[in-house]
Length: 116
Image 1 (cartoon, rainbow, N blue to C red):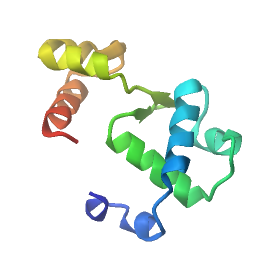
Image 2: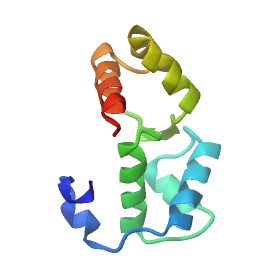
Image 3: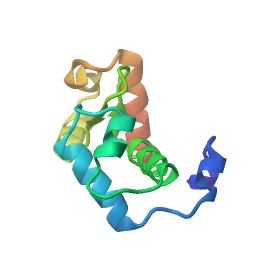
């Protein structure tokens, strides 16, 4: 998965440790929509290298746990029960919290079904 990314240079550094990924996940989930990337980076409980932080954000976005909004804030969107509900009703995903267009909803649905 990592070798296929457009940002290949970003991933030439070593992969982040699991405890670091989990720390960022938990912080984003607790502070969803509060911080932009730079603000989030500066307010994390433990400091890390910017490149490592960007790799974690890329990973969380690629598995649909976060979205980076147009205003730059990072929002936690992962909700397994909600995903299951919307997989059962294709039309509903287009109304996903009122933040997606029909095309965006269809794209996410296809990616979820492919197991991304």
